[in-house]
Image (cartoon, rainbow, N blue to C red):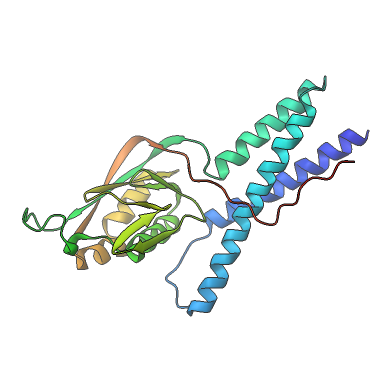
Length: 233
């Protein structure tokens, strides 16, 4: 009876975490008018949500180990399925489906300028693009082969733009996006604000419908805060 109650409580917790994660990913993002402190607070809030999800993954991995010697095959199978779902929602597994593929390339076909500073991609451009994609229904995003999750850092280091602590490749680069309605997202991106933003930086942002898009998993080391060592009981 105690195991049933424990299993029920775990299921409720997982459902709550998934609901929070779904709400975070689906909430439309509008152009920010907040000051730097508000933005930092919001960023910390998003990081906390992601860290809580990682903590849940760790907890259920431990539970699977504990249940592995049990004859409760049904419970073990359910926990393994739940863990797989949590990893998928956290961006830790490869995913594929219908979507679009964006290409960022030079706006002018001048071979002498390709690769020069005029065609560098500033981190702010990529952050605005991600925000706009999310507002139009993007479910999963990968830029230049790097999976984007809630805590993915996009920043400039010594004049180069880094995603997930890796420098982006020289242009052109690809942005792959999974969505439930690729036609709508494709149409929105043809006249998007991001397209205008990139054009001002001498860059062309083009969109193409793709029958099946594959996105790699997030492969950086996960650093989970606020986790305590389990005490023996």
